[in-house]
Image (cartoon, rainbow, N blue to C red):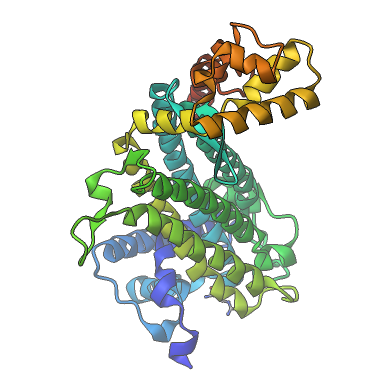
Length: 448
Ligand code: ARG
């Protein structure tokens, strides 16, 4: 029973938050005349000593005391005597754990947001370098239209931009102080909830004690945003795996991020990208764990909630590790621009440009589409690229074509012509880089 119900094996990770919450609570009790000055200063000094002991690995955690709250409280009483037993006045482990989790997650969200900002800086730098590198754009994994690599990388950046915004948004709902809700119904002591909340850096205090001790929506939101961010990483890593394959050879992942095969000496496997892709699964699994944990739970606190910690901690550790590794991986990728450009030139990627050109010469789009279909058929048959077909031959299918058609038949001309907000033209990519940096810079100023 003791072993089964103990959470100390994992919730001791919350010791800093638990001690900070206890000191804020005790200070408030003292200010309100509920604790004497002497008791408060003993409690504060004792808790700070315990924190040092924990950090030096000198504190004895025991299953018999179940969780981080009771271990620390007992440690305090052992140290300072009677006053230690007064700390829990007007409080319950139910509002205590809710407070600890919110403090913990608020700091982790800030860390993750800083890491996302670093990653975005790296992506934007690479996008700038590759603003005019040509690459086939794909739909259904078939060559569709040429794009610039910088544009493709800025598409990744958009995903992380949204992730950042989502984390910032959920931070607002994390940063609400439940302390004072006590077990579920509040407390009869004359407490000052705003004082405790302010000391702990919360933006506000919770509005309903029943909800405050039982609500774990903030964990679900965080887990959902983390899951989606991992989905983004998995999509990008899949592209890296694909593009680094022998058949494509669009890029080389740095040797430090690949491994050899134990049996096939010629192999260089993209293990790290695959691992990030794979870790998306466990994070999404943890999201489902937390959702199911909450399903059907009646108000107010139930012990089920102890099960929220391991999935949340695992998400935090996994996400931080993946962001760290991915941010180091991106700058050492070698892009094989020649291979990308050759692939972009191969798949008749400018067929749409030809149709659009004919439309500009007053050919109805459907007719243009049909005529270009015939041109492509001819090119396949003759093993020519579109820009290799001479004008006379082109005019057999498309009488409206003139000499200037060759400007748009080249893949360079094709991307250059997509010159609008959100388009792939190199000039637009450079502009988008400037815009993206403005966003990133504004974050820094906001965080002070
Ligand atoms: N270890 C518990 C948890 O993580 C703390 C709250 C326990 N409260 C209680 N009434 N048993 O949720």
